[in-house]
Length: 462
Image (cartoon, rainbow, N blue to C red; front, side, top):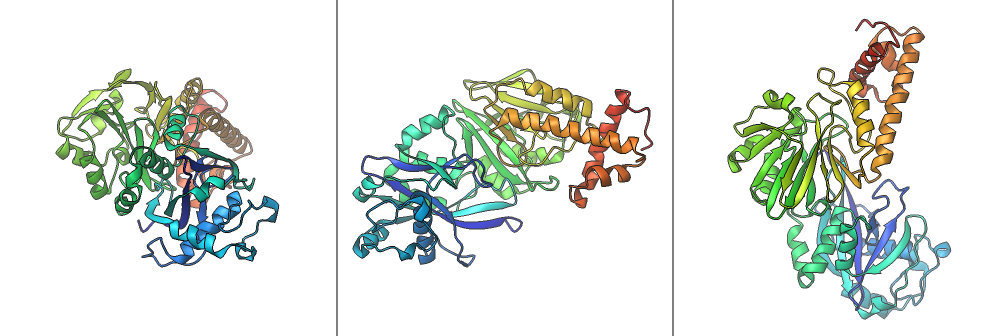
């Protein structure tokens, strides 16, 4: 965890006596959790030690302040405060001391949860819970900046909306809603016990029914630090995708907690997608490895290997196998027909753009693959690196436009006299940190090969 920046934050779960939880929709323009439904809360500004618990006074004060700023509710004040009158100094308001004390005494600290480290930062959040008749009188007004909508809803109904792709939640929010819906009486003790468990158990990293994506540290390239291992479950059958973990302790804990996988699918032969096969060989030696026929000889394993077909059946789930060459010649993606989730491997990444393999990749095939994928009805993209992508069609079109613009710039640089990769990259990738230029030059090589194939240039001396 040393390379992960942990951002301390806090959140309050408000429940009224009707069994409804307050959920807040974050503005889609925000950098963190855009367009997701969350509980009121935010970042802790005061300095806390690394061994903080989560129930410290500064944490409680932050939780109250964030609730006030986001929805206008301040314990002890009888009205919701208008957004135009809110400021960070919430102590200026006159309040009923007994009512505020009562609210704080009723708050139950239920432990901490961390967001998955899809990037090099993670929110380490202290959660509080309160259920009281006092909550019945809260009629929240969103601040209109961070929070644009508020909704009282029963947890079980919220989960049904999530299953129907009508509401989107960050993993800790969904995990807590599940606990409230199905193990309500144990919400405090269960979440307190979960605090010290690893990601994947402390917080179920679920993004669609039966589909989980857990990041593991891996031998990937910058700016990423992890590879997302996908777990698909249906009717007690399990499929694993891309077990590329170098953190064998974490991987072992997760593997010990799941059903024996029927298959392991590797999206392509790069080692950061199969580095954890040695553990699977020991724990699940009868699992069958599925990979594109071009990659069969590129992966060393004692597991039985088979060339992947057009479809995989796991329980009642039917998963389409889509050949997606471009990043490599053996790249495949998976499309779950029931949830419309695309498991994209390295063809699409959670932020930035994909780097193609300069030995096995093809820019021609990369464009063809994007044009094929954009015709699919996709609710969500789960990449092998980085966070999930909800705006699937926009992201794929963004990839197409980005590569077309890079290619135009490369062609222009060559026409204007650039004759080496170093000359081209310094012009075309001036907006990219120089430590990434090595990877940029690999993409440039493939662009140039495409330009030669299309006869837009005659040759280039690599």
